[in-house]
Length: 495
Image (cartoon, rainbow, N blue to C red; front, side, top):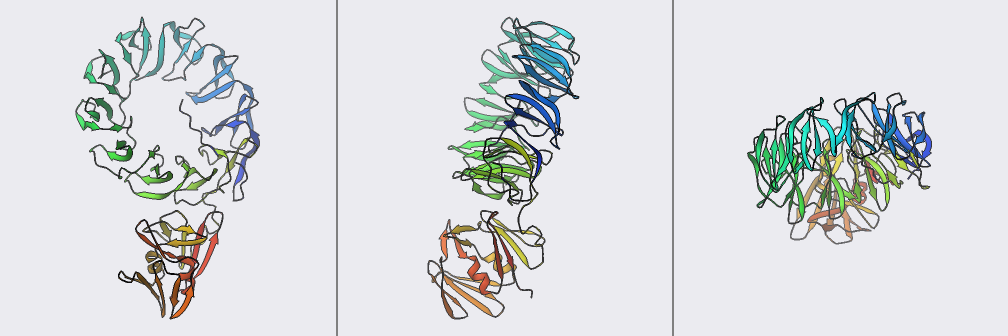
């Protein structure tokens, strides 16, 4: 039911290997080692080696739930089992996935009933609407009102609600006299109808709305967050909500404490401990503490899976790991979420296939000597042989020159940094050598000798940025550049 496809080409010049050499019109991420693929509008199944499990013959194949998959042919629906054999012929106008051992299905007359995994009708076709079972109850509609039945087709909660939803965490949201409240599985009102809008319970709490704004309640109806918020996301994620203020988003906890500032235009879904966030049109990632761990440097960014996330820049896509290292080249036109270590990608011809991204494709991956540092354009941290060091700002490229706040780098190689605010002068010392630079001045001095810089130190977003290569080479460091990943490897003299 919930499909998320991300857009992303096919030519991988890194250490990617194809998971399936065959190309398809469309592919879905792997689920339990099986992927759905489409060729000439027909759906089939393949394994992680690219072997065909089910030839593309169906008009549609759904995800597997309870050892059954929905299939469609000639606009009618049925089911196949986990051995890909037809167990329920396509005879139904609509079906829902199996849940708690039953599937709700609609016949040709537009009435809903329920079948078991063998296709036997166990609840007759008498309902105008029906939903899957949850908490041993199914939401049904009859004569214009909603109620709930059990697996024996007993009407446990009478059809008396104008609007109702399936049970979640033992409570169901219902509408009476134009106000929302909650009932338990016995039909007892637990939270009286009083809200103009209400959502399902998740992580022990539910988002609601009153005339005063959005708020958050616990399962007893007590407010965790009073209804004063401009907007809240419908569901908690890791104990956090997306809140809106003045058109900007932030992450807040159930006490109303902001984990981030209200600076984001978009916040994506939490996965593997990270949220994609968009600031000033660029995407990065924050953790559940609200700390920025990958600086906004991407035009789009998807959720992490298998330690990798799809990102794009200037219309081309690739994958990064949780340290913002590229795991593929930025060369794809479309891609979906990684699963089973395989990434669905679309090539220049518009066809899809799987690749196997490396955990990190940097040419410097194995460079872990004690006297090395690694940085990457757009990433606000620096890797040493045994730790990550947070930088004041991420390195940037200006006219082909890498600039960054230099203090952390100089101190990491054993040097010192001095700042003279009146003269706006930076003095860098390492061993017996001294480098002097001045903000916005092209002249630099190394042990008293003058050199003209290609790009002078500059002030950006309140940070003084210094040309990296010039400074480090003056201190007899080696600076290597990896164009594909935009990474810098620094090797400095051992003390």
